[in-house]
Length: 180
Image (cartoon, rainbow, N blue to C red; front, side):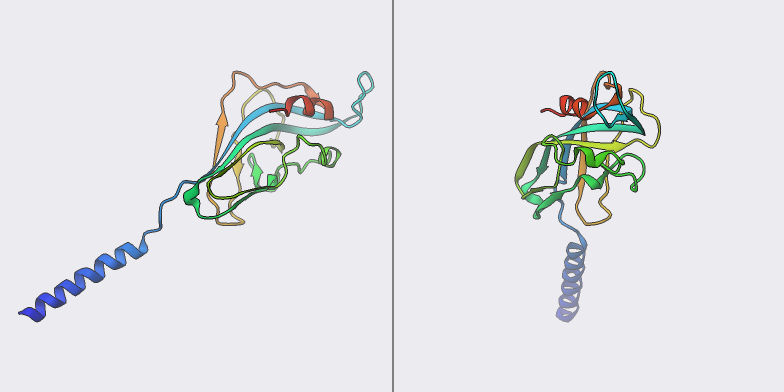
């Protein structure tokens, strides 16, 4: 009789242990807070008022990364890379437009940022994303490509009344719209 109770207790303990081992710990994802600053359809490569040289850019939306919060319980360092952001197509990622190199070294442009657990990076800068078509005044949902690593990221947009659209943008337009 005692042998049966002992076996039953061992089986119950094994079941409880195996259930506990299969559960992954719950943690809060990294959150990227952003605001959409503008949309445009053409890029003025010359930036000369009255004598613009425009190139077609199809549709572009420009977002400003206000903050990246990496919670302490994440247990790992998060490395933000603008190329992980996109609208509809992962092959059309941040700054993938032909004119992107013209603003590569601008201080308002978001670059790679490392955020340790429990830390927050503020006022990261702007990211330009192809919309996949002509951009009007609509808001776009920014997505984060986590397929290249195992990070978990929540994109948090700030709602706006209306999105600014100058039609044609230049370095100056981006600089004006990409301030904290």
